Amino acid sequence: MYDTCFLHCGHAKTGSTSIQNTLAVNRDLIAEQSGLTYPEALDRTGGNHIAFVWRPYVDAPRSLMTAPRIEGALNTYFAEHPGDGGNIAFSSESVSSLKPDELVRLRDDLLGGCRQVKLVIYCRHPLSFAPSFAQTQIKNGKRSLADCCAAPRFVQYSKVLPRYEKVFGRDDVIVRDSSRTALNGGDIVRDFLELATGKPDIADDPDFKPVQANTSLSMTATVVTDYMHRTWPGLGLKNNRVKAFAAQFGGDRFCLPLAARTLIEAEMDRDLAYVAETYGVGLRLDGEPPFADVDYAALLTPEIRAQAAELAAEFGAA
Image (cartoon, rainbow, N blue to C red; front, side, top):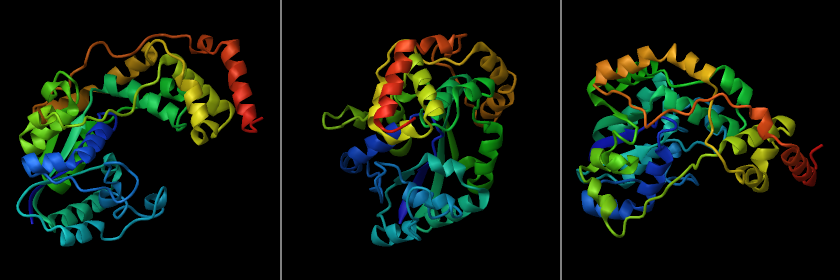
């Protein structure tokens, strides 16, 4: 049996993919130097353990959106890899979408192979989170730029964290600030290694291979992406050439308007207070958050519109 299971559940936009992919690439080195096991993923998800800790626990059809569920994946893993008293880590930000009863089933299966479970969540200041999350939603075609400006979204930690506390217990929920100034060495992978192994210096080993992920789009690239999603729905999600077309436009970083900042500031105090008062963690900002009044429409020049239409026509889009 393993001693401690560190269940990393994100949250979104805090560097989860970097943790997952870096630990996956370096799993042998990490195990050798610290005894921490980071299991291989069961499908093509890099280091994301979605097939272990999400699909088996969600109600269909949510679990069948991208791949079939593998029933009893954790039980099978623990039977084949019983552990020898060391620690183990699983990571998937999809855990954050599980309902309370689903979390209970996940916790119980983890306790079938581990003496204790620690749930790890990195939290991001709402003013930093909202623009980053908006850009991701625009990039993935889930929301329009106009919607993101009118109703910016951020994680309501005062509602999210109590849900975890009821299932895992307050003392077994570990909250970390994802800002660079709060992380070990300003790096989220080093910070997680410190937490799960006590040895962040593993990242300094010459054989350690860091993996960066999810580069941001510029302001213009985000506006072009939004334009293509709205004008030719679905096209940008189907073809790498379309994604590359939008991504080629450099310039200033993406910003939400100042009015969006005002909306967030009116709602964020209770969440910041909950994290600070319950966990002693004050969420910080890495510099001035990206809010400014920008004429988004002016960024869509006639030349860009013409190039976009030409590219869409190549794929039969009217």
